[in-house]
Length: 122
Image 1 (tube, helix red, strand yellow):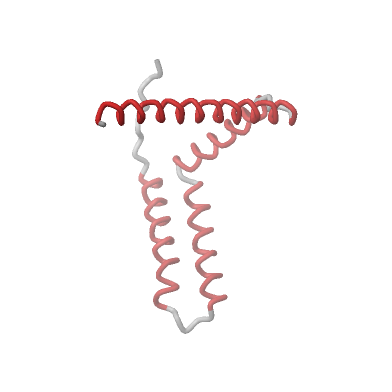
Image 2: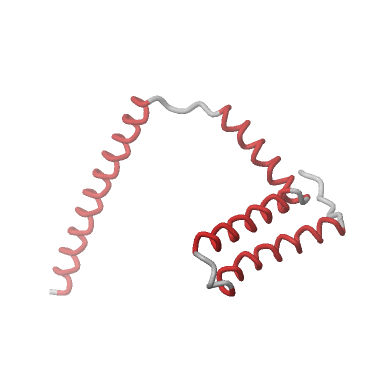
């Protein structure tokens, strides 16, 4: 069983998150309150503010933990043994045959139950 995680309140981390939210709000307000700018400049401003917010978010404790999680996932992905093309086709065909057989079986049972109910109801 894993040990409980202790949460440490770092004032710098909180300030970073407030700045991230402020930057994202500013990015959305650029489009709303500066319609006189061309679309290209507004888009550039929004993308720039969004990227700065992303970088700042990655510098927080949660951002660093997320990057670490992505690295660990990449390491685990390298350990996966992917099926070959023939194995994939074979598995796909097996699934299709099973689905076809089950659908015919269920259709047949539904028809029999329908006939039985019709015979009882009259």
